[in-house]
Image 1 (tube, rainbow, N blue to C red):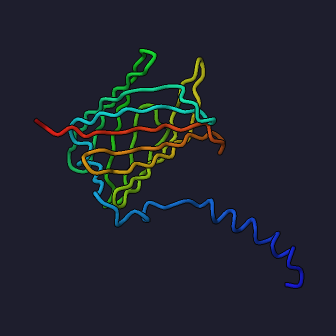
Image 2 (image 1 turned 30 degrees about the horizontal axis):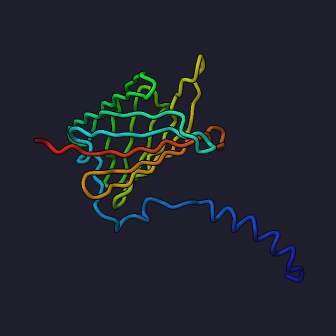
Length: 180
């Protein structure tokens, strides 16, 4: 090309978009411990987390008690949330293992099906949540990344978006309780 500035202008958007593609779950295939969603959530798991708005300010904290039961390729998670303002809520997930790496899930406040892909110690879980705010309910996109750590700890970061704009994030730490 005879015009180097024109070449740079045409190449820059391609490089920018390629850089925004993000990491795929397959990048974690060699990471350990290996996350088996059905095994990890079968039984009692406790979690603590918070929602931070787009500026990073923590606006809501919560704790979650999770009871998981498995039957074949189906995992049912009964999640009971207690918020720092004294309110509570409940979500029941039904998650089906599609194959060695893919999952599909439903819950009462999830629009359509959630989809997940797990490799190594990581799971990417995506869904649309019907989120009540005041008198209205908004459908919000969630992009969860969960990373299993040693000692039964799993870390979770969820990015919330609406119309492609970041609303905030939810961060959680899960601890698997071992049967006594």
